[in-house]
Every structure is written in structure tokens, then in C-alpha cells.
Length: 300
Image (cartoon, rainbow, N blue to C red):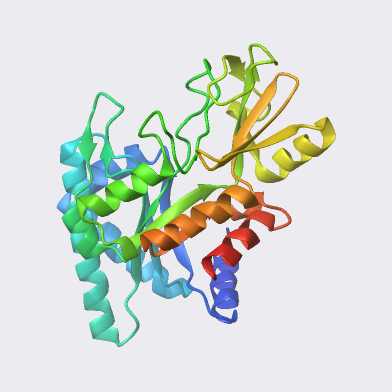
């Protein structure tokens, strides 16, 4: 995005009714190599923080989303805490000095506060995050995917009766660990994960597979999922136990969220007292069917 486009974007959404905030996300998938040395160096942290504040003010932004995917060990988790502590102090100081509204700080995080599946088990610095962040964006998706081609899996199910790999487990773990529930936003995907079935007659969750299906690395954006379902005459299943959707046609199987599952997930988030929800990424829902279902459910 060009600088003029960014400035125009921020100005445009500020006049929206109701008004919304414009935050810039810093990082993303594969950002570890950039953040790790920066967060470990006090001088680099200071330079980074001051440059982000200046950037936000120049372009009329309202804050930042830190998307470090992901700190790899306890030392890096501690560095996350230091970065957030100093960043929060800086935006508060800047607001006090200028009389402007304080810039917001958020962070995209793993679906749960503790990484428990990899060899490098580690936990987020909850105390520093609760104090420094306005909210976290818990990425409750990609829980299954192309790294496991042996069986189908719902990558963003609300519940999983057989494991901890579920949206509900992750969100409730964040709250139990001490993150204020009003500072937790539930992430939902606007894309599906695809597999090729070993036997077309075995097509439930956990059915044997021989590889990924259509899409780059077995990923189809929601608009393409709908297109597949329509053109192939796919069977669409709403799994009540998991609160997730999947479809199949021939040997292709796709697990995803749709208006039905998103409505129930948003209702769950409301019951849990969470601060909100978000989608990755909003442009994948061409006709806004899923996002409108979520909006309707949140407003009930």
C-alpha cells in the first residue's frame, strides 16, 4: 500500500458511521527472524517503538497490531513482555505530552497461551500482555493443515471432543491464564483447508487422506469454497458436536467456517464475555455472507 493510499484509507474509515479505528499490523507469518533480534536489544526496541509512534501519527492511524509468529522459547517470550511494556509506556507518554488520544496496542497470538504441541514448549507473558495491550487477537485457526496429510481435520472447530485443538480450548485457556476476557478477540478464518480422500466413501472428520486438495498448500478462500460446492454439487455437512462445516465431492474434502458455524461461534464468544471477534481475511468473503452472519449474531 502506498503512503497516500494508507493516509486516505485511515481518513475514509474515520468518517464511517459508526466510526472505526485504523490500526496497522506489523509482522505476519514468518516474521520471527525480524522480531527476535529486535526485541532482545534495548536500543533496537527503543528505536522501533519511537518509529512506530511517529509513523502512526504521520498517517493518521490509531494504533498497532504486533504479529510475531512466533516467539520460539522462554527468552523470546520474556522479550515480548519487555517490548510491550516499553511500547505501552511510550504511547502513554506521547499521549500525555501531545494531548492526543493514546495509540492502541494489540497483538495477534497463538490460539492458546501455551505452545504445547512442539518440542519448544513455552508460554506467553500474560501479566505484561494484560497490562500493556488493549486486546489480543487469538488466531483460532490453522489447527490442522498441509503438515498432516494422513486424515481430514477441522482447522477452526469450536469444539473437539477428542483433543485440545479447538477454539473453545484456546480461548478459555487465555482467560484461565489471566488475560481479561474483555481483552480477548476470537479469530475465525474465511478460508478452508482441503484434503484428498483415500476412499470417497469415508468422508467424515478424521477420514483417511492421501494428500492436500485444491488450492495452494490445500487452502481455498471462502468464495472459492462456495464456488466448489456449487459447481461440484458437493455435500455440505454441519457438524453439531464440533460446530464446524465441511463439504465433500468425489475425493475432495474441505473443512471451513460458514454462516451457520460462525453464528454459533460468535454466540459462544458473547456468552464467554469476550471483547470481540475478527476474521482472516475479510476480503475472502466476496458477498459478505459470513461477516454479516457474525455481525448479526454479535448484535443479538
